Length: 288
Image (cartoon, rainbow, N blue to C red):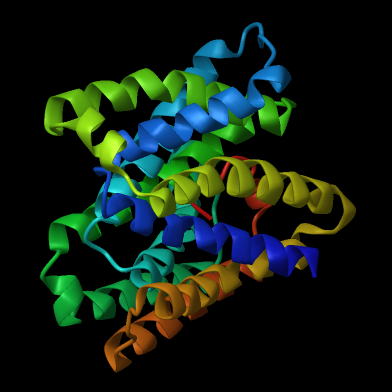
């Protein structure tokens, strides 16, 4: 029950981001969200000698590239579609492990990679998606960056999850603020005019998703085998699409539904035959 609750909380993060992105531009929004995370986790943050460079590297992939690009894309891409495409972070991580660590995988996982990306290609055929190919590309790069960040986490060693998330936020804030300054206008005006609903969504992302959701997940991961916990992540797009339909009046066409099922089927093949390097998957995943 707790695992299902965590998946619903992670899916609600994408809904909250889309609600907020209607009033606050993407880079400004993710900077604000990271500020909430940093302030909340400040008591848990400790200097990690010999690891600060690695933490900064993770802040680039997990923070700026993954969260930043996803938040910008959510101004134009619906919740259900984004939640489905983010699942490609699993096959991306598998491919990166092959390239970086020379970790080989069998034909079943190779089939899972092909099937998952075939589902994404089918999603591109949906008119609402094909009209926003630039932002679809951003979601794919975001998924790739999340896969890369998890490989970086593997090399980080034993560090508190709250410490990791806290340093990611601290290091990512100036990166994101600089990009917002370059590409966005009237940031302070949008913050001053933001509705109560938007501010509640920002606090939800920073506190409920980052602190409560991940806090519960970190308690579950040591208690159960990875092949017991990881399959629950396939529920994220289901919750995402459902919440998008209920809260945002988003609709599911048969192309999105079919492409989503194919994508999830491919990811399921990989998850249920999981390599060791995904054993700690999700250690710093806050978009889910």
